[in-house]
Image 1: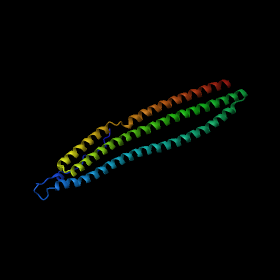
Image 2: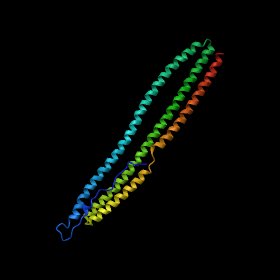
Image 3: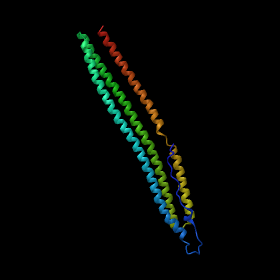
Image 4: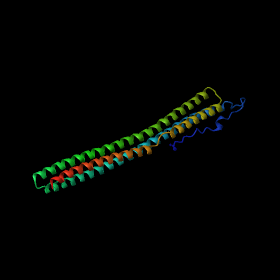
Length: 243
């Protein structure tokens, strides 16, 4: 639900449409007063909509920046942990090889090392793929939401501009200024109501991110289970050589 999308109908004062007697020297003031101000309303709405579009673009950019910052930290930490784990693994393999006293045992240790390295590579690839999928889909979800908001706001901006341009044309054609004011106010209100209704139907990002998170957790669990089984099988085979 988009509760922050608030653009009110134009504040066109009733004083702008006050008419005078045709015999008055100010008989044309009603038209000139409103028609002069309609240009001001047009500029105000352009600025208001432009500010709103900029606000949502900044909000989207801010969210995506946070995502990228978090991604950089996660990637850095993951790389460091893997590097430390790799160094420890090498030390463990060397220790294990030192315990091998026969050629058969040494060959078994080599086979074990190869099996573990392959399992690690496959495990990391699966984890990286799950993370990449999550990040890609999350970014698409965020972009889709704010893209829809932008499109909806664009439709409102276009319909509002059409209403204001028609009001200008009506003023120029000599239409009664009160009628012009009532018409443009009603048109913009209708556009605004449509805008709010459309905006409120745009899906929130949170449910999609929650679903993506659960999917990633499932993928990570599957990768972990597969890795643990491969290592367990390799250990069982290795132990047979050391009996």
